[in-house]
Image (cartoon, rainbow, N blue to C red; front, side, top):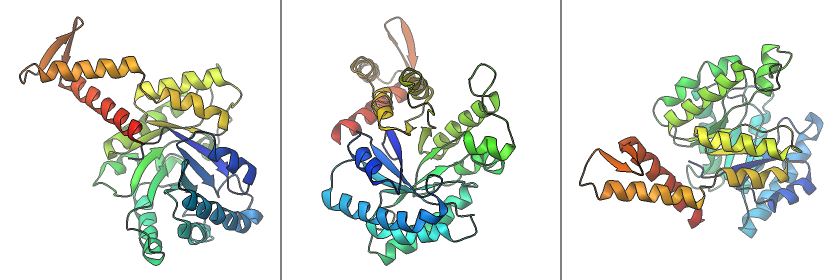
Length: 299
């Protein structure tokens, strides 16, 4: 798993935005070579991105740097050109857009095997974040991720924009402005698929970067549902996202009390606490929350 709470998208050809992103407090930056970079600017963006990666490696501080490459299926070799340009800079991970399922992630992993060997990078060091729902066919393959573990896969996320375009939809929103039920279903399926695969489920972006209140509600709801992180598209979104995915002191204290209650129950399958009857799934939830909090405080 990646351990990140916030992934901030930054265009790879926008040095000022990258500089701001590096000081935004985001756990990870996604340096984008795909949709946010025009086709005629991609060669320049690759070269600029290599400089950023080299400088960040030398500095050693700040967020982990991920790169969103172009789709493996674009037919022009752009994904391999992206990898050839950025892998010498040792990014923390690669975001794979338009992933058509498990097989695409494994295919990317084979490419990374070769690039890591060529550039003296430890095998398996480069992780993968799959954008798993951008086409109708991809949604129908979500169950494939629950097969044997894919060692490089760290996280999965979903999106409504590309999918609605692929479907020919007028909008992915209902009359009240909320997500259409179809896209809510896709969101839930991604959450299930990622959890079944043993990787972090990452909630999609909140498009209105000026709506901080709406973002906070969305992020808290995602954390409540079981997502481990959320994508940001503006530095101002990072703080609310990090807050939503960081357990507060009261939540940690409750989890500690649950663990302590079971520890003192001499192997019992259920315990009573504050008028509630708790069983082993409650213990597992509390232990998982405390493990995430410990990992976060250790960073």
